[in-house]
Image (cartoon, rainbow, N blue to C red; front, side, top):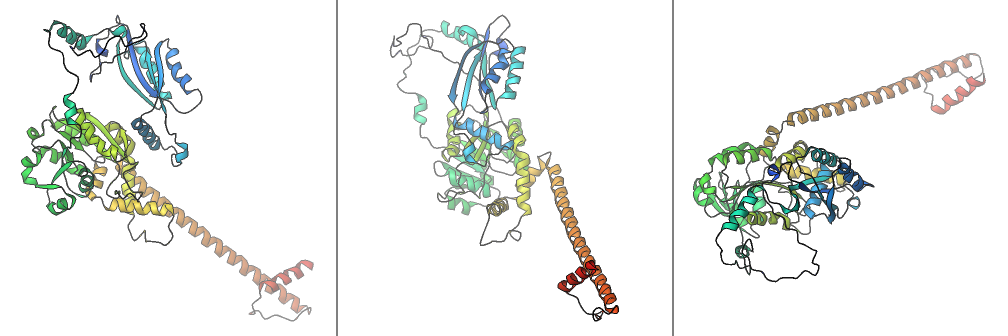
Length: 494
């Protein structure tokens, strides 16, 4: 009745006491409109480690503070959330090499407790829960008993005063026309990584590219339309998604060079190895009507789509954040490119991403650049560890130095890791030198003892010869080990 929709059927419920629960979703919550006089309820979702008593300990976070529950239920964890938990477990250094130890699914617990999110007891309980749980998200706080507050209440009052309008048909929706629609994707920066992404994009969508260098031949080979850098206006005309595949050191200059008026209503995606810096630049220079996704495909041109090769996109992490999204369908269509390639879709903020991966990525690329093909010659028999080093060297050799320099420049701890790597190398050299000196000294000491023992044996034999027991032995004659043993036995008997 409120929204003047068609009623398809009535009285279909067979239990008169049953009722349907509806959730009103919004980007901004209504917690600020909940006063102490309004009884509030908060909904949260969390996952727990697979240990005995984990749920008991989690619920105790609330019961110890006299916070009551109105509902608790469990559901199998979604694939994206499970991928996030696996990813974060790997970043914490937990052992995940054995796939048999990794659960095939986890449970999410949905809990409604009778208190507002901003209540002091609730804050303490949630902080305590975060210490127990692997993942916690607050879905929102709202009034109990379906009471409306804030802007929602105002909008409902406006609807009540509106003139009656005809019913809205639900046979079809405008969004139905967008099913199966391909995107127009533009790529700025058609280097090695830009071409790598384009090969996947062209399978389902129309792709165009631009670069400061002439990449027309490469674009033709892939099936991508090439635009010169001076033809930016035509390049941006009609595209749905703009992918910025440029080095971190050039990112801000590229964004400043873009005509922001031509970007209105479009989705801008950055794919840099570090996300906090590009995210800040996009938010600073792009208007509110431009959607933004911050992402990092944690794989590169060393990965291809050969179905008979292990080097595919399957299982590779794709980390992303929906920084600002108004066109949800377009955003999901773009993310489906990576989802359909069976990537691990890990949603986290750019700041969380950099905290988790920035150091590891820099050390990885630093190690790969220290290894060259002269240090890793081909061998007829290869161990898994050696093959992994060869793959690392191949992966980093295909990346530009600007990419590596961006990891160094925009990571505050990069110099610390570089110094640590240098110190570790010097430490290994000192250990090798000390071990070599020890072995040399031990060998010399053994030789000196042997020579001293031989000299003593010769003197002993000469004394015996003088006494007339045996013939004299020339002092320059060599004595073998058997003779020395016999002589020592004779000395011992005497």
